[in-house]
Length: 295
Image (cartoon, rainbow, N blue to C red; front, side):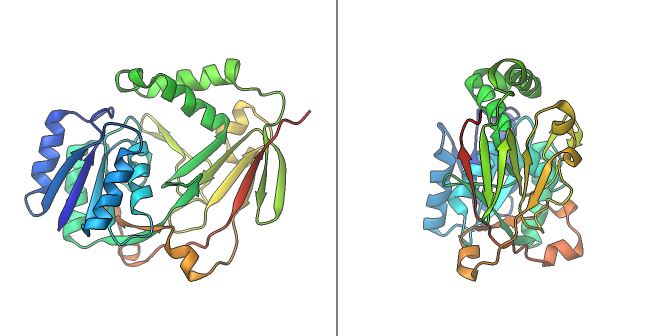
């Protein structure tokens, strides 16, 4: 197979040594080209070019941000998406059952490639960009914004930087007194939102080795799930039972589903007979978020 390995050399767990080792392992049975990203959006352009050239698969070696950029470039095409964990958390790769060590994960990925374990998955879309596992609005987005402002420390500090950003946002930067937005889902309006998370899979994230689950209803085999937090408290952020949960339900045409899908390479050790042969087809729902300060 003709593969493109997209490497984010700035990602937390990526270094020159494991990049060479990953390349060598993939190249034992496949034709592999390696490219490195140097700016935001670079991975999307590489993936789009891979579609134009008719490659078989693009493998994202970096964090979840790199993965989402590659998915944006591949959405709706027949070029398969592969993932190797190179970030600090690697939510999507770990949700597939992959090892968090890229040198172990590449053996799982290669086994999936050699076994032809490629299945279509659905992607969420926000502001013209696709996401593989979740998108946050409000408090969740503010935490990520704080992390990105100190991006140079992310590689060194890792997950503790997210904890610091969450505490700083909670106590200093994010207004928890007044709601920030309302959410409209297929004509249904949910007012007075403080934070919202749209889930394509579960868990929401990991703290160390521990998965943080917001909704067990979310999975790649089911529809998108959106959680709207109408109050902000620690118990509401830590338990989905305290949140307003709305499943997205809407019937759409086949054409509108097709362009939001991507083909995923299923790692060998994380599949069963049923998931290896079943396509994940999800109906598409539209939801809009109106940002407005309520008094």
